[in-house]
Image (cartoon, rainbow, N blue to C red; front, top):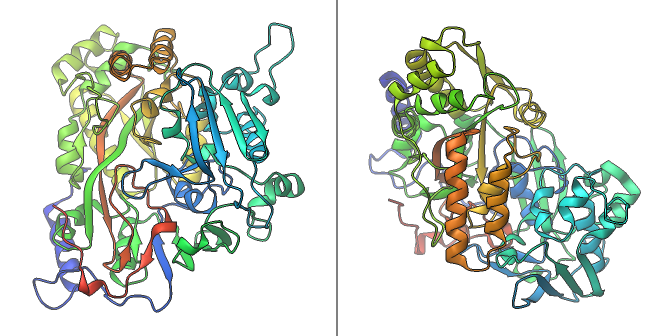
Length: 553
């Protein structure tokens, strides 16, 4: 089946758009234009969240929730994404950036009214690095002294096994947190807005166990709390009365709609049942039409789309096979013709947008070379190559990409490819246990730095779905992340990325573009590289017609 949207599909999409907007041909906005009477925001959030425990999930739908019900030492600036004071009022580091000290505010509270102290951060960070927690984001903590040794169950020189108590973080007093790094880490504060570094409620967790995130037991320290969670229906966040900066919070409630069907998201928005949609939840065939509306938002997005190759299965343990599969994909056609939302074909792993970083040049589309490499690997003209399966989670765009790749590999390499579609949570679990041949994957940077992508492959972690590890690559990443000079560090990171691209444990397909809808009365929601929109800063502007938003290019 041809994965490219047909002219008939596009024509029907255009008719659908024409039929659901205002009667005039030059309507400025898409769908119903009636602001909510109350300070309640309805948001299309994509797939059903897997967990409300920030130590147990690594998904984008969960991230949108975590950023509002928990708060770490720092938070994201809604415009620039720079770390700004949150639970910590200020911070400092020594000359070598090997020790960081954070000074916490005294008025921070959990939603049960108890104070947030440096001791809570120590307990929380020990919990995420504890092997018993099995956190997919434990690797972000590896920059802290002894974290990796703890996670991997190593033995100390004295013969004792490393435990979470050995983590290089301690409370100097109730409101001073000292963090000792494994090696100099000048960019550490950039990482701290991420929810892996947040604080979780020890008392609630010890009392309720895994049930602590249920609305009746939930305790957080963010501007909102989880008031309701109805599976596959809605997650309701309400303003927290104990939050230290509650006067800044102008929304009373946020309702997150877990809808993964892209056309349904468009219909909800058109009908006025959603005020905003997070990026990449819209049907790809409609994007070209939606761009003409003022409430369509586009721009650069610090996210890559790639395929994992399970290097622990044959034939993907053969680097020649991996290179052949990569070279046989016409990524420009996928990005521009099959998807067409503004995506850019990817020949590297790190998306553009990092100041001062010059990525290496990755291999392009070369089917002739791909066939020669496959023959060298022992599969001339595809003969003897086993039937393989591409696994992906339910979404129109993922099926479109999988069908395109299936067709390209069949035409160029003469190999048989099947497709396997599963809902989000089932697919995530399959990918984490590496029960696949080829799997759809994507990563949104946790901070604006190449390491947020390149670190994924430096260790055998839950987020390294391909299962690839290489001592040379790990050495390059370790050397780069210990380099205090930014220019030299970027050069080392580029060398590491070049080696990663040569070994091809993953196949970069394209770099995402921001692509979402936002009603004109949704204020404080700014386009940025990470698609991060802290609800703390979002509000309903009922006078929006006095200063309407301009269309994005």
